[in-house]
Length: 130
Image (cartoon, rainbow, N blue to C red):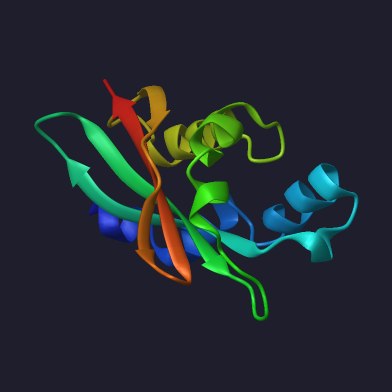
């Protein structure tokens, strides 16, 4: 089986979750993409073979001149889990296609937002496998 780190490289994650998705999200939310205070990046972090889980993060990078307020990002897992532009079902489907016949995705979950730094917050995305 291919190395998961290679399979879900930064370039592949950018194809699964394009950088313009944050602008589309803010355009839908505020009517203007420039009102958004962060960019969203999908990043692969680990494969837990014993638990049959793929671990990703939705990294929220503060935009220049904006504030990545903790009180706004802590509620995002609930918002992202059902927002059609963020489309985590589509992300999971793309991951499933990349896995081929080795594994099948069986579901996903977002965990609580972590404030890594003033300019970076992370929302863990765990995709279950069978």
